[in-house]
Length: 398
Image 1: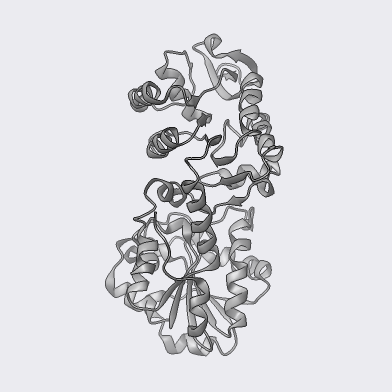
Image 2 (image 1 turned 180 degrees about the horizontal axis):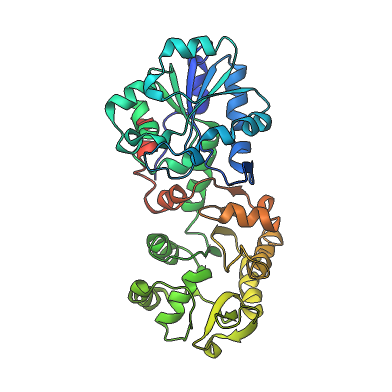
């Protein structure tokens, strides 16, 4: 398990009147030009405030969406720059110029009037994902020190993640420190009894190692969402027209043969039908018909999962247990989440993260019920699976 050799506070001696390149994650949901969820912005504010207190000038670098190395206006940061400025409480200058054309002297002039400069979407540049050395040198020339505050991309070997630390004194930000500390605590506590992992979402293929890890080390693994459909199919149950991964049925069968006593699956489900989308029925697992579509876990399953969670000592939550985006199919997820809120264990430690997890916690009002909520998606899962080899973390240590 990786340990950060540096702390954010170690950067303080490098900051006074210096330019700090800060890699953040502003890959946030936007609708009609408005920020829908500002969690990731709120999480970086403590680091930004400390940098400003230390009289540092800040060059913010982030990505938004997947423009795949193309200059795509729908992913431009100009849409969110002013709102981010309001949330942080400091005026931000949005620099739309191509990074390859920016000179450090130009930035110096900007910093006479602004404390924070936000560069255009870093994924507009093909060189970013290639970790191109020339591109890395160019970005590095904009600052005197580098702060990595983007845990969500630490599993990627990109220029702005693992490249810059080869040229500048580099440190983790406060958020990155918090992420590593809490996830390490979660992993290291896996040998304690009454530990539960709740895994939802669509795909086994993206969570195969994490299912194996938790089934091997934890007391129980609760599985819901479309992922559960693959396991139910592996057990020979009819799942109708429900979403599942046909290619992963054999893998699910193997996991059940090894960890069947630890994996908890739905006993009943809420179904609809492609023929009649207004139809909504509660069915036991052995009652699902060929034209049914499983949309949520049923009331028996909700109570069963809830009763396990209220007596857990440690908990990992990753993903929804049903089609939570559409009411009323968020009811199962929300009911089980009440188990986190009502947990009876005095020192209960709970961590949530990955994929749609932040959205479902915010939507249901359960965000503050967890000990820690990770901003990471893929990085959250990757850290738990292979916490000793994430490029973004290794580069800080090296």
